[in-house]
Length: 266
Length: 301
Image 1 (cartoon, chains in turn purple, brown):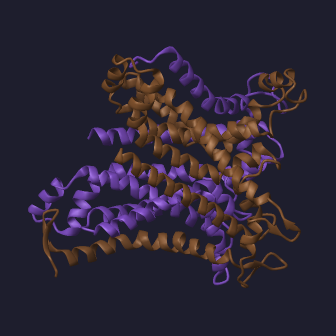
Image 2 (image 1 turned 180 degrees about the horizontal axis):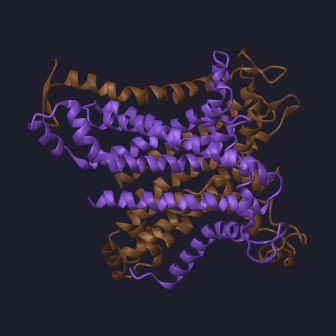
Image 3 (image 1 turned 135 degrees about the vertical axis):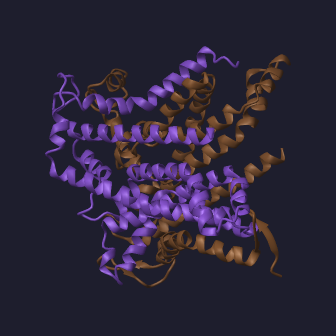
């Protein structure tokens, strides 16, 4: 049974094909020369060139990037500090459990609930200050909220796997607390931080629901643009845009995978 | 009271350590309290408020929204919202079940590969996991389009009218849902299957156990940790899904996510939207509770 039998192989390959069929279709029709319909009319890269002349798409791409970069930076800093705080101090079992639950909350609850809660909360905050109008700031806050949890979980697992030996040795050599953190702990958990940050970045690119609920008219991101567009009509430009996003995701995933695997081998 | 301990090679007291720990915890925790816990509480309060004439919130508290959710509307009792909640549970359950069925062969297949190619296959499984949901959903428009063989075959069999696409339909919703959630089951399941002790399977084989018994008694218990994580990671978010039914299901196949989105969008009834979110939250809590009880039972056995 250890050598996979033929039924298992066929089922597995069919499942893989099922996962990749939609992605392949998008990529395939992004280089098809016809504007309407799904008949092959020859190879073209026109749709890709057209993207770079579409101001709305360029603006949406810029918004997506700003959102992802800003939220990732903030979430990585906050998540890392939180992970150190949770793992490197003698909390009682009860505190530990409740911290753990709070951290898993954004991971487990349906994102539409977080989105609804944020809409209502921002709606009330708007009574206090107009900076909470629907827009990029609200989206950034929303993204950070779920990213923190993921970053903290990744960094914490790195902290746990490190153990205490090296930090004890540093203490024996009279390292002060700031020195220990900055010159010993931080370099050691850096791969974890980078992996967490890449995960957070991918999550931000991948998110649609939170963005959709908190976005304003001026802060359309690429997923929101694609969603609005395909509800009207599906065009080859959308396929080209989606293919570019797919390729970026592939790069990010492969990068993160390599990093985490290197981490495990260390 | 203040105990002196050695902690990571530092001679210190518990009290001063915890003080320092609080310093580390506070930025992240304050953020989560402000933008996760507090909005959650506000959502609960708002679910008891009511909608003004222009879609604004009116702070008159009543159980009206929950009554409406239970079906007691202006025109007598209807089962609309109860049906939508039930349908969401059903769709999530079927999606999870199909994903589990397809994940086992896939994971066995990947686990059977040599170490080098195994990581390649695993990366292949992770890529769709992180690919944008909107793109993966609308992509089915292309595959189910009337020009392509799938729709043509269905038309030839008389299932759909000729020259019409296979969406919007229940079938399309399930295709979309399973293709999105399958990696959520397969990835945690793989971590269990990778560590599977094949000696037990061989032993069962030697003792002439049937294939079903081998699976139920030698494979399933060993893979339960990964499987249960996968099931919960699929079932809970699948209940709240709104992109797939919105794009592939059409107006007839609404799920609870669509209703919530409607209330916060076109209908502009935040109070009712909040109460439906509470309904979804209750379902989430129930499934998490069941899952915890089940997983406890498992460890006892």
